[in-house]
Amino acid sequence: MDIITQRIKTKMECTYKRIGSQILIAGTVGLIASPVVADVNLITKAESNLIYQQLDSSARGDQDIFTLQLKPSVGAFYESESLELNLQGSVTHLERNSDFFDSSQTYGEYQMGASWTAIENLLTFSGSGATRYRNSDPNNYLVSDYLNNDGNLAKIQNNRAGVRLNYLEGNWFNTTANLSYTSVESDRVRTGTVSESALDSNNLFARARIFNGDNAKRFLWNIKGNYRKTERETGLNDFTSRTGDVYLDSLLFSNVGIRLTAYHDENEVADESETFTDKDEFTSYGAGLVYRQSKSRYIAVTLNESESDNPEIDGEQFVGLDMRWAFSPRTSFNAEVGKNAYGSRADVNFDYRTKRSSARLSYFDRITSTSRLLTETDPTGFYVCPIGVDNINTCDLLADLDYVPGEGLQAIPVFEDNISLEEEIILREALTATIGYVKSKLNLLVSIQVAEDERLTQQFKRDTASVNVSATYRLNSTLNFVSSVGFAQIEQSSLRLPSGESDNFSLTSGFNKKLSPRLYTDLTLTYLNRDGSFSTGVYGAEYTDIRLSAGVKYYFD
Image (cartoon, rainbow, N blue to C red; front, side):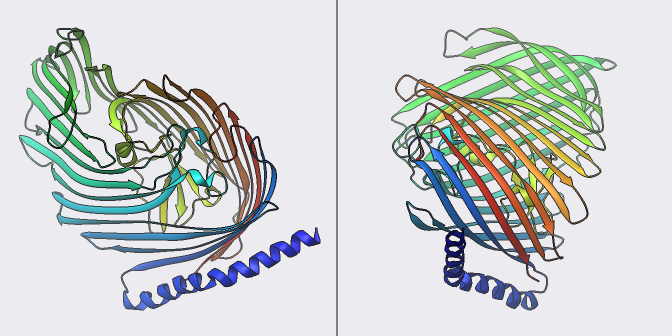
């Protein structure tokens, strides 16, 4: 035991000397900038964790690993009537030691954002950027991080610029429009399906909607359209999507009327010269009945007929549904159901809220790609954490997807999509559910996600079913017990690529205590387990990872 203690002490002294200057610089910058930029609020924090890790794997046997983790972080925030700016950055440094290896790694991450309201309630410009690390191997979903299969971590750079137009005060018509440009790049890493993969794409997204104003009583209308173009720089052709949706309602008898509707969906893959083009195009027209009480309470059912180059679906008749129903200010159900070139089409959302509980259920299916998923998909719930924190033991749980982080806080999704960094075009079907409960000392969040990804260019399908239960219990004014349990089952089937399944389990439990307004400490136990037939990652198809971590955090002025 004395040998282990001395080894840890030596490691800590060496590491503090090596990166102590980095922490000092971060703190000095904050102290200097505060009086110079009086309107900018700065938050600087230093975090240190000592971790004992016991790994038992099919590929490398048993290992005992000691890790010293140091993590300085800083955040800057500015807000005025028309301008909001934020910048958050952190550096995670690891010193690791075992009987098999000694290693040192450093991971730098940041996120920044800006929003300028040029014309109040009308025109807003925004921009954001981020660099972060995430798991790139779908078979190690939930169980890969800095300390386990870190070779599967990919550095992803995401930059975005956008403009939003809202005109919602018209008597006869209103309009909303969004235009954004996003670039996504990642390191080239090894994954479970191909030897190496990476992302390097530019995404242009435009959305517009024009609809009737409040003076329209008997004749109501809605026109909306989306345009997405993904320029794929990794030797793949460009991917373009266009959708359009129109309805016209004419109320004949009180709240009952006739609806006319049309829908168009187009997905195209083409090279720059357009010498090669592969296009799937679908159009439908329909008519039916609508029952409308208000703009937030209506049901429309239509009989539609399709037009397509595909003879199997050309001329097909089907029933469509458009429903928006607010049962109360806190409970609503929205659904759009129809067809497209790939089969059934649906977008369904249910929201329920009370004083102490909330629930959200959503389902969608769409043609998309990896880079689009990284920039467009909504999470199922949040951990609300101080800046620079990625350990949920210091975070609150929140199921409110409309939450905007306050000063010094960040929102970390409960679930991340289980995707590989291969810029393939996929048909994604996803069902997500979130249930949150808050009462007195208890904060509980349950999240469920079921997703199916099918590649359109090859016979390949991946199914992911995952559930996460997270809870925080306040024992007293300074001490909390926190726990998070996650399970994921991944199944992959393909004619050319490896097929199989993986069952991944994650458990994190511990205590965090507030020692003073600036000083916090935590003690955490983590258990990770992977079982399956995919031998990906350095530890193989089956392994168990048990960790005990003690940490301290200090917030500077």
